Every structure is written in C-alpha cells, then in structure tokens.
Image (tube, rainbow, N blue to C red):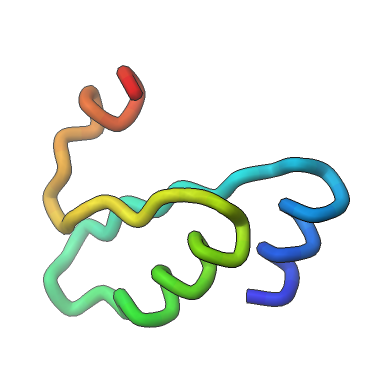
Length: 53
C-alpha cells in the first residue's frame, strides 16, 4: 500500500485492479487502489470494458 501511494505521489502512477476470483483479497486491493488514486473493479469485470475506460 505504501509503494502504491509513493507511485502516485511521486510519479503520478495510478493502479487499477481487476480481481479474477471471488476469494481475492478485496480489502487489500481497495487500499492499494485508493492509495494510488486508481479503481477497483468488480470480480469478473469484462477486460474490454476496463481497457475502453
């Protein structure tokens, strides 16, 4: 999470996460994406939709 925040604050790198399984660690993924001003998509989100956004 700290590295995600560093990537955002120092380099403007956003992190987007797309979990592939229902048992993914959504809490950690949420923290990472929030720290890096990114987005956490729902499990099973169509990757074409993600790339289009």
